[in-house]
Length: 150
Image 1 (cartoon, one colour):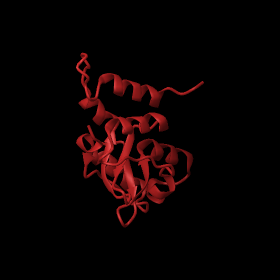
Image 2 (cartoon, one colour):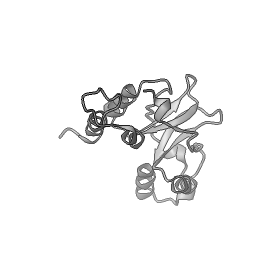
Image 3 (cartoon, helix red, strand yellow):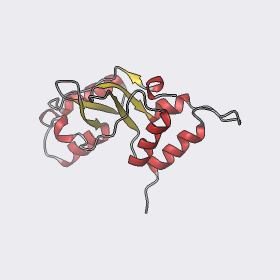
Image 4 (cartoon, helix red, strand yellow):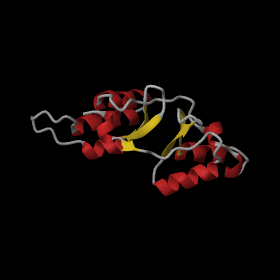
């Protein structure tokens, strides 16, 4: 099973110049918790989450209309390729403790988003028949994302 089979195709994205009021509206309208940040060529340069926005606005004395996505987006970008095997993407999520991965082409252009919830919906009970994507696969990924060393 490949990432392409499970990813959200044609995801919403924002530019680094979009202000946080605009980004928040996009998140609300799309019903999602994160947007890839793309440059004018469509290349993913970061990701911004609803949590990033909340923390930025809670720690700055500035209105959302005066803070840009580029100022707040995560500098570390973890992504996957549409042809990647789904277990490789789950490993990336687990290792880097992220629930969402932009799906990019070889030249870094956005073609999809893979979220832990997408994977969860497609997981199946492994009754010994060798489920390609089992409940155990997603539970182990989520355990890796959410468990933090003391």
